[in-house]
Image (tube, rainbow, N blue to C red; front, top):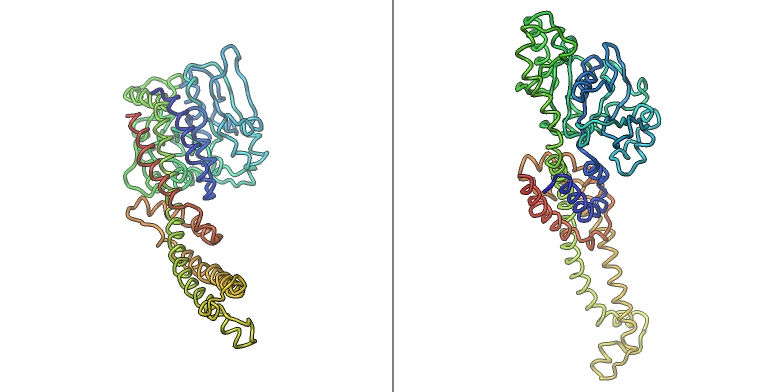
Length: 448
């Protein structure tokens, strides 16, 4: 199946089958909707002198972005193809966030200051027909939200979540020492994107004086990477340079093939698109399933207690039906004839059931009051305190998901009412399971 057709089919299937459940359990579906929209995205990030714009210009074969040693662009710039004959167009951020065909609606929350640093460039370029490239402001060493006017890391995380490939660039002179780079690698990117979507690049290697200088810079970057990631196994770092700006040398000759591999990797981003969509759907639906599993088990426990309370209430109702009016007659000499006496004397009529019926109704009401006010309330407090007992955490994957979703479950439990008994959580849980094991698996099979 064509990848675009498969993406549209996935979008329709998820929206129809799962969006009502995301809403029901108060989970954010807009993120998943955004991922399903539009085209493959490559995000290029790094400090201001890392060669981001140079790489983009070289990749597209056009001087699209300004380049230089000093900061030249302080905007998140989306570069993609326009219509034939339309030439180059620039669309401001305020328009982008209000275009429902684009996946940027959630960016409104970052405010007007951000939107003035957010734009889309359209141009004729064959590489951009099925891909968008996002150039980003250079990362800095000491900066606050007040300095930029918006939360840079939050914006970066939001875009990283949409991206199919993230190119993180370094230059030999600042090999990973930038504070924002540390935050991005340590927390923002791992939370918002899979590790397989990130490639690391050290550019401008032609500026190293000799091979020894290059080895020193590469070693410093590897050391800093180990500190930032907390891992000893360092991912592959591409070494590259701009051939139009570099002087030919024996040091650069062996890197030409690696530079070509990097360009091929970036251009192949569209082929990752459907697989990444499936990964994101898989993760978010598993989060939904975990929340639903907890609420389903909570509902089951509620039904068990409701059954016990109903049994006691039923027995009490039988007692007051036949003997309640006898106790009242003994206290206030009313009614003239009790229900039991009327049954034994064969004189029973509807009037004999009025008082016993009222007593039964009062007993049922008291039973429901005790259940809702005390029994159910006690169950709710117990489950909030020990919410982990509501789910089966039989794998590290589920344990990691639970760490993320436990707070959401506790919020739902704290607000739960007796209506949860009739909310159909078990039915919803089965529906989600069918989607994961049957529908989603069938899409994985289609892309193999």
